[in-house]
Image 1 (cartoon, rainbow, N blue to C red):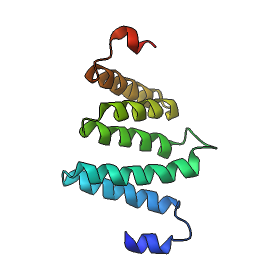
Image 2: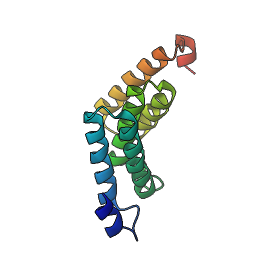
Image 3: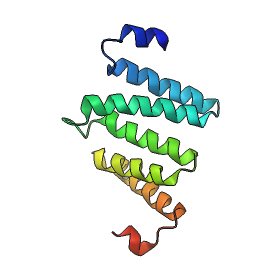
Image 4: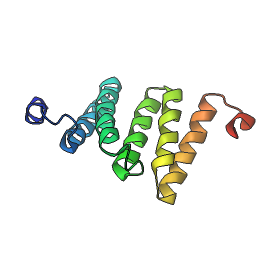
Amino acid sequence: MQIYESIYAEQPNHPDLAICYANISEIYEDLNNREKALEYELKALRVWEFIYGEYYPNHPRLANGYYRTAGKYEKLADYENALFYYEKAKQAFTDEEDVALAEEKIALMKEKLGITEEERED
């Protein structure tokens, strides 16, 4: 990672860095180090937001970044942040199946947070 960061020192928001960060996040996830996994997932997401956020908010990499970040928060039992990122993913997804998956996760997070049916409709 240090090599990549030194190569891209002039371009800290290069997509290659985001891909590396996401891959490192998955390695930490496999090692059951969820805090580190989240840390690197957030680094990747920051790059995707910089690249696509303003001009292409529905880009698949950005949408998947939100969804992956939500999943990392969910595994840490931080359901409020998970809900936040699942909602962002739902807004960014364009594929109906992806939207449906995000909606299921949103409902699950609201259930875990104890949000009632009436509050869900708001």
